[in-house]
Image (cartoon, rainbow, N blue to C red; front, side):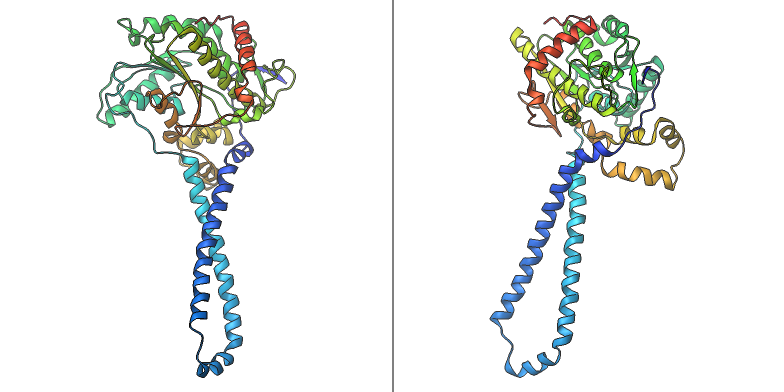
Length: 423
């Protein structure tokens, strides 16, 4: 079933999230179990060794024989208690270790003033990872431009960022918002002129960082934009491809970064892209479409870096996986209406029960945004064309390294968007 795009209510199943964290969970539990068993076994062997080196005296044998039955029962009970402690300790340690692995490093905040003079554009800057990125990059002194789908949302986002700065005793008045709808190519084409006319680029300034952050996830049914493309494909890839192409002439020629927010969900597209099904025209699935779009982010990153290098341009393009971030998960698990209701009132017992798995299996927003903020702040050496998780380079599989698919995707993206990407 296909319908035209309208304000959505996405419902998310935890299946994919559980798969994503299963490796961390299993490794943590196994490691914790091993350490607990080794530690307890070592203590047990020390006790045995001690008893052998100090055998009981003959005058104690009768007393020991008289209490043999009680000793057997007691040792069985002790053994059971030991096993329970080992298992309980392993599980508790595994849960804590897995939570640490999910959360990642401490939130990175650029030192105040360290980004002064830098211009950062963030798509989808009014909520979640985008808003958090805007706050902390503005804290570092950057001129920040957030894109939002309405001027009302933009005004609220600017206020949120400035309130954050005020609470942290930092003054930075260079925070702006401009309208952009990635699901409307006319809006994408109009954006560069809006940006050039804004105070953000006054005085001949150029863009130092373009953070392609906006996205949608696992839309239940196949929705088409006004341009006729499947909504996930256009929002997550095609719109950003066209936007990056149109903003390329405004990038700082002395050096700039394009930061693409991708996901480990690209592994869903394990067999690579089906170029005859980019819009879900043959077979649409919420997670299949999302996985494809995240693979497209990575392939776009690699091809843009390759072409930039060949053209001798100082554009560094990098992709990342932020992790499963809490607010986004809550919204999709319980639905937009329920999420809004819970935000406006105190959650009840049932609501809290629904949120407990989300709290454990996800990152807080401040941690989830850390990798993209870290990269946008110019951290890391030789990051071009690479993929990062928790501020560390992560190896990609064969599918995400397929440059033939990357080149074909680039060519098709130019044709579908009607935007030539010239470097």
